[in-house]
Image 1: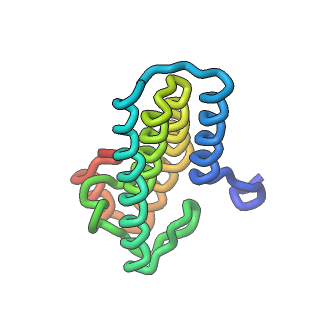
Image 2: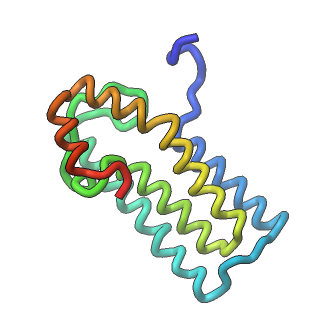
Length: 151
């Protein structure tokens, strides 16, 4: 079965699915870990995530290159958030999920950012990096030496 012949589970599906699951678990099986007012720190992380995500989207739009995983990039983006992390979109989602977990203050809520982080680190990032190496060669390899995968 080829990559194109079956439906893909994409990072946004995993992020949303895991967030819904941990919110349900929070109400069904509460496991308090962080209480008020400390849980309010989660709002900062939750807000930072989409900011990084949308800045990254803007960089892709500016270079007119596809955003969705699995699509062939037409440009190597190294500006904006890409100066600090090779995966700012994934970082933004992870931070938002971490923020939600902190805000919920529930031990089980921390499964969401962990699941997302592991999913993209195993399923998407290695393939995306191989594709970038194939398409952009030395330029991408040099970028990879200078900028960390996450932070």
